Amino acid sequence: MNAVLLKKLTIGSGRQKICVPITATTKEEVVNSAEQILAGPVDFIEWRIDFMKNSSLTDLLNTAGQLQVVLGQIPLLVTFRSVNEGGKQSIGEEEYFQLYITLAKRRLADAFDLELSRPAETRRSLVNRLHEMGRKVIFSAHHFSDTPPESVIISTLKKMEAEDADIAKIAVMPCSPADVLVLMNATLKASEAMTVPVITMSMGALGKLSRISGSVTGSAVTFGSVDQASAPGQIEVGFLEQILNQLQTN
Image (cartoon, rainbow, N blue to C red; front, side, top):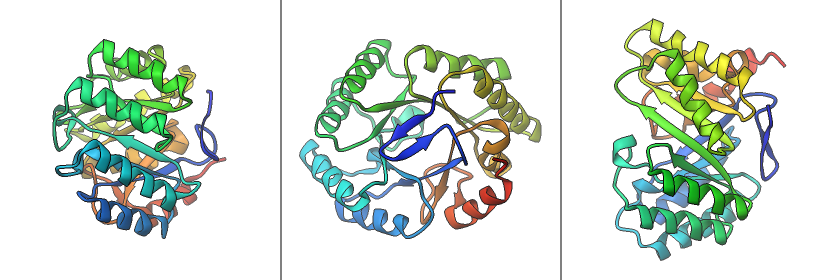
């Protein structure tokens, strides 16, 4: 597997990395959340831009600039999650494209979350442009009502790899304990077969086991919470770090 470097952080080798999302709705709250998160164990931060209310592009750029000052050497992942993928608001393809490209040009983010559900042309253009500017891309897919078969999970992750994702990510919802095992087994097989790091999770209380199993299954990153979770089943970061340290196998 080819590890991915975000600033000084290596994803895809060593212990499963901890990412904490910022889900604040104003610039002031975003900066305050970042400072609070940095007081605990975190490897990098995800800024969920879709949570921002009534913000212009200029407002978002200013917020990103302040975030970079606060974060220093901690990498920043930028995500605009669309409503059909569990996000808080919709955004047009052109606006989505310009937001990501402008943030990348100004070097205000280290990595960008790109939904596999976006149109193929948007995906191709964004991946190419972001890579030209030295930024990393995490492709993502979400299943909020079920867990697809193992073969579908693996093929989805491989499709992301084939489209030049630097990291491939999928989140599913379990309806039974067996579904959690399906996700974990698919993760193991994908991580052994693919050349890019994978991030997987089974959501909700039932799926919490999948969020701490990366040392066994090969999921390179787990998402934890400080004050507000961005997805069901996220574990508080202090407790999460203790568990990961206990389970670390290499």
